[in-house]
Length: 345
Image (tube, rainbow, N blue to C red; front, side, top):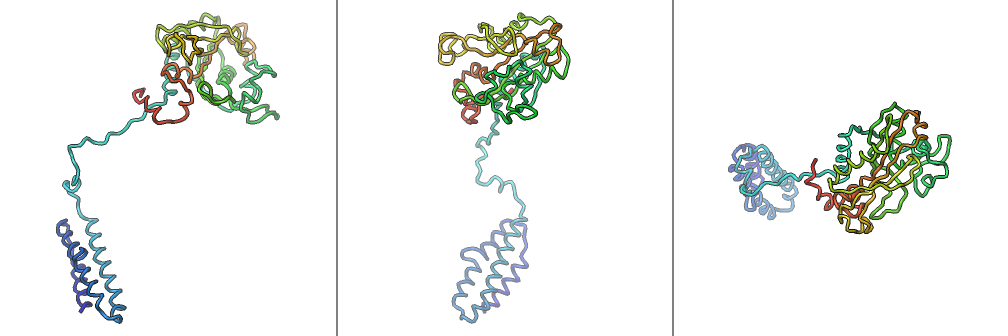
């Protein structure tokens, strides 16, 4: 009878044990294969009477589950040999290499700028990106009616109130104020960081960008010290053949003030879209720290003087890597970033 066969095979399955892969495969073929015992029993089951099917159906399903569970249990405990690990593999093929990442071009330029000024004794100072009116504007000699205070230029978080305006900082000069308030001269420091301005996004401008500002305050600091410091910086960053020129300008926190241009590194002075066909590109603003700023920070302007400068890291990177659209720096396009894989410094 079919019931007797199932009982006999159940005892055989329960008694079966092996650690040999070949014997286990023979067990699978014998009981679970397409021409195995369970397949034959199911074929015989089709011919039994409806009354017997009610009884044998459950027994038959339990018998099949027992065989499958036995096979899977022994399979899980089967030791894996070296030949099985490499079965179907071509060991002569090269392995899958680990793809290395790269530093962001702005991080590369920031590090290079910091390294150059470190040689001159400049340390790195940092401050908050959310600033109050005093540190972002008033202490830096911005009059109340200055255009930079307008909503069109600044991202204000809160206007007015007992504590005054709160805004995303528009420059890292606020870090200079905090440094001078908290210490005593001499100061020689760089202030790198992200800043925010309410500007239309284009190939040449963005609503956020990165700055590096510098401050040197001590006795008898002159404009000649400023010029020589920045000339050294340009020669180190762009090469000895780079030309430099200073143009008079105006900034509320420096007097006298200037903008510094260098010969365009992309067209070599011949004229291109980046330099507006002039052969020159402005890279930073600079000047002697206004005595009012020193006094606002509790420093005797009759004893101490100093210079300050500020540059956009994106502009420096544009010239160094010949990138014509600064929007690429914040779009996280992998095709763009992969170009800097060799720059793992």
